[in-house]
Length: 138
Image (cartoon, rainbow, N blue to C red):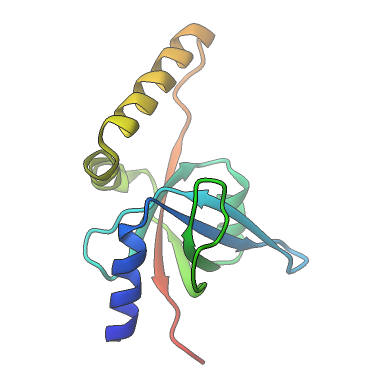
């Protein structure tokens, strides 16, 4: 759908989007996340593999996305979508797009995380990559 492609492209240009997932009881949980797109058909998001949002997506792929600020305050229409976990194999693509879009901020965050891992002597945590596509209207 042309409308979906336009909405995905608009969200991909945002600095943050609010990613809303659904708990078992049906209530929502929203998180602001960085977002990129490689083809204007889907949104790509990076998260820790053990985060609650990833656990909820594994159980229920229904999500809602909307433009937001860094605190998750929604700034626009929410879009019903379907999320799919891409696994660690998508890391090169998504990380490259994130570095390209967020530049020095992303590189600084990566450097800070590496330094904290060295200081705390913890292994690198696993990452998960999420593909988000608009859901067709019922």
